[in-house]
Amino acid sequence: MTRSTSIDARRADAKPSVSLYRQLADTLRTSIESGKIGENEPLPPERDLAVSYDMSRDTVRKAIRLLESQGVLYSDHGRGTFVAPQSVRHMSRFLDSFTADTIRRGGVPGQKILSIEHTAASMAIASILGMDPHSPVVRVRRVRLVNDQPVGLQDSYLRLPFGATLSRKELERTGSLYRLLIDKFATVPTEGLESVSAVAATADDAALLRVEAGTPLLLCERVTLSERREPVEYCEMKYLPSYRYKTRISKWSSD
Amino acid sequence: MTRSTSIDARRADAKPSVSLYRQLADTLRTSIESGKIGENEPLPPERDLAVSYDMSRDTVRKAIRLLESQGVLYSDHGRGTFVAPQSVRHMSRFLDSFTADTIRRGGVPGQKILSIEHTAASMAIASILGMDPHSPVVRVRRVRLVNDQPVGLQDSYLRLPFGATLSRKELERTGSLYRLLIDKFATVPTEGLESVSAVAATADDAALLRVEAGTPLLLCERVTLSERREPVEYCEMKYLPSYRYKTRISKWSSD
DNA sequence: TAGTGGTCTAGACCACCCC
DNA sequence: GGGTGGTCTAGACCACTAG
Image 1: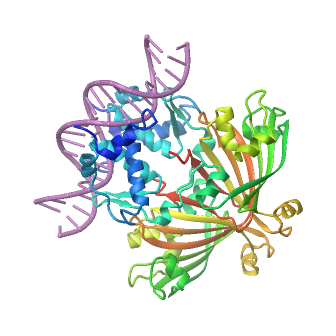
Image 2: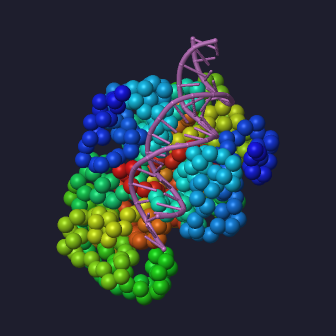
């Protein structure tokens, strides 16, 4: 007995082995994005999917759980599994670079690098990055652009491997600090802790963002953690009011 | 062969049947909160836990997945499963009432109800709540307090079941709109879509929050969806800069 | 190489929704 | 009652990490 066509084709693909349930999740996601199943319409029952794609029901369920966690599907006990409304599907937020996030929203991301300094950590920065004061850190200040218009300021402090440095050229090439972390320093940003509030633009902020001083800005502070849950970046972002920060939050805390 | 003590005790408890994996998750969460296993220290291997608690390894894994989604644990392939740092464990955000959220942060929640109107939905409100214009809605305006100090304004539009009404007395008793939705209208808020930005306080805002007009405020708009993914509430919240909005975001979007 | 988490299976039974 | 998702099992094998 052989596996259903489309999944088998993927299996023979470049990657040596993507798990079955991820392949199924991709297949389902694609068929949902293409509109084959409408909002709030049901998927075939798990048992049917298992037969169709020649896998166990448990594997089908894993695919459904994955898509559920991404806001693509939702299941109701006794009723069925349904396609989430588009409004939900497009709200999911992930730990993502500004670059990728902007592209996902349909904008053209850009940046103007204001400065890259190799410096010693202040007590505050050292504390939040879990290092000793005066340890070396890299500070990167940037203006973020969408479609060539400034939308926000980013002030990042990076903890680099011992002796490593970061050049303006490297950053200009990729445009994304996260890509550099992954590709050059083999550090995968895995989790982010964010704290959001509102502040008034300082004179400096105002000049860079081309608004008046005192304009309300969205202040977002973030600590980024590696796979081992070590802090690797602290970043302060200030965004114009036109920039909207979207999130989906799920379920009930007793879960 | 009988089940390990603590889990069995729970099983005999009030609730007729909480699933095994949730019981194990509760047990593990408790023992983590109590500090029996420190930050970034490993749990016993899944196979050991399965033997200890007399359940299958798959059931143990379900408990671990649940805690992982709540930011309590993280697993690394080939290394083990570890307790997340406290900073992560305390950042998880859920679709929660202001009331519950404030308590979780260690504050005393309060509210001053400014008005409760039964009115007809504007086109904008009707559109976002997925109803016809002029359909009946309830608008609730409140000042939110933490430790008796005003921290924000909430302006909620509720879609109630046909013919239902909402009295000030009911809302004053529970203090929480969500509790009323659940208890009185059998509607469980399941998912929220939020959009956050910054605004300047209007003269009215300023008076209610006891600050100067023009003060930057955090503006958070939210659409709350029911289990069936029908919109049940639209809410605009404006918070003082001192109020911080905390989130944990996970993993990589390619997941 | 030994030990860990990750995937997958085939089958059983329960809980819930709706007709 | 018939169909759906939810839970649980026992066992197999793979993939990754570390000493």
